[in-house]
Image (cartoon, rainbow, N blue to C red):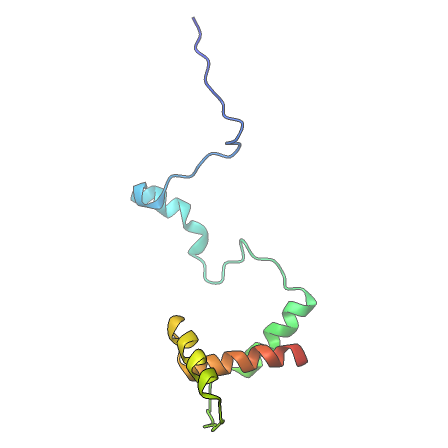
Length: 108
């Protein structure tokens, strides 16, 4: 009497074994694509808009200099901004910088 194997319709692709359960050889084979620096195995070329954003970010570099800015704020706005920054583990300066970058990105 022949036994029939159940084939699930939902599992068209076989599930990969979790990395923590793999042997050293299996893990090496599964992660071989990441051995090369800058592997483009999963990448694709940037479109024109993405290329422009990349070039602008690359030219900008890191934070070379900082300016101190004194801005009068309403007490309630200052409290709300401080609470928001604290909840997201940001400094108030980082929150203001992110907000300015976000606002200015719509203008540029």
